[in-house]
Length: 201
Image (cartoon, rainbow, N blue to C red):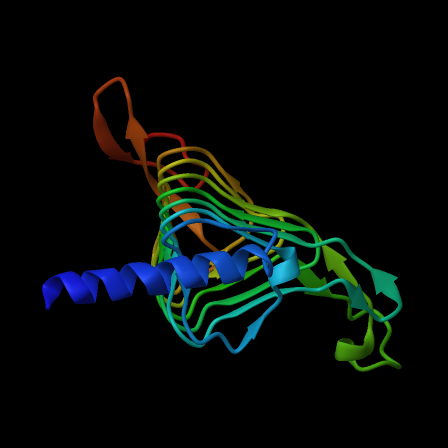
């Protein structure tokens, strides 16, 4: 009975893998996206062993208010994304290897213009600015990663943070707006408190 179960699971995985090879730019082996709300496979590359939980919106925007865009969404190997991810991309969003993302996180490289007060904001053009999340990061619940954000390797984003800017490797980043509160010190081999710019206290 156990052998039969394992064999059926193997067949299902092979079927999903083969089917998704034709839908996505790349779809790595043993990856699974469960019950998405909106997804645009032709703009998405998925690495190996990636799991995306239900109710995800992972959307590349190729045309908006008369402008064309070339979105590229890359979710690299061994990433896990919990429910309700809201990811919208007009330029480039990269999520590095071994990065778990908790529930209700927003990641976007898109800002709506608002300068023309005679038009609703939703009807105005958008600006795009790429997002890069390094390998081995951890992003906690309800965080928002804004356009232009660059996270180095092994960064921790605290729950409910709003992140905008560039951050070096091995940082703990929290708050609204998010700031560095700790960084790994290789001289002492310890995590040490910092000022908001990442300088050790």
